[in-house]
Length: 172
Image 1 (cartoon, helix red, strand yellow):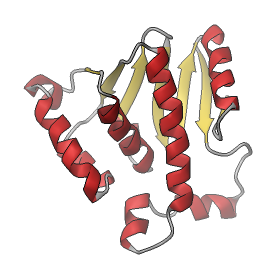
Image 2 (cartoon, one colour; image 1 turned 135 degrees about the vertical axis):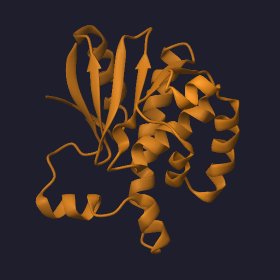
Image 3 (cartoon, one colour; image 1 turned 180 degrees about the horizontal axis):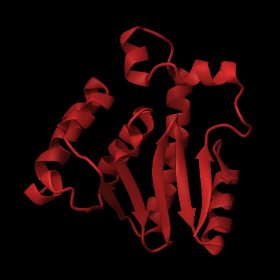
Image 4 (cartoon, one colour; image 1 turned 180 degrees about the vertical axis):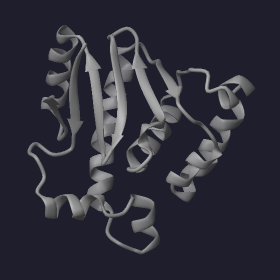
């Protein structure tokens, strides 16, 4: 397996840029009526990317939680919380309390988990996405970035996908 960073920027950010992007999370900025349009554009690119992977992986993704709870809805906007409640109610006891892996086949639920992983810039490492068919693991690492673990063969396909989008794979 080779490691890469999935990033919204095609270059290394300066210290000033990092402060600009990482000072507060999206939810906090929205509460303070700050402009979050750039963050939502980036989030949309990530969702498109993950949706493409979901489709290539036959409409499934295995999600592994290090910790799981209703607190995750704190990273969602009001209109998204109801959908998260539905998702949460569909889970089994073992999945919630023993953090058993969950196989997601509903793209809307998967999008919610992507949003949570993206918006939680401090604790985003609480879940991992596994695409078995394409032998790919993706872990949020905070700061609106992801760690991608993949065999070399798969990574070439991923570069093809990212080239058409505004997100970037960087070799570590």
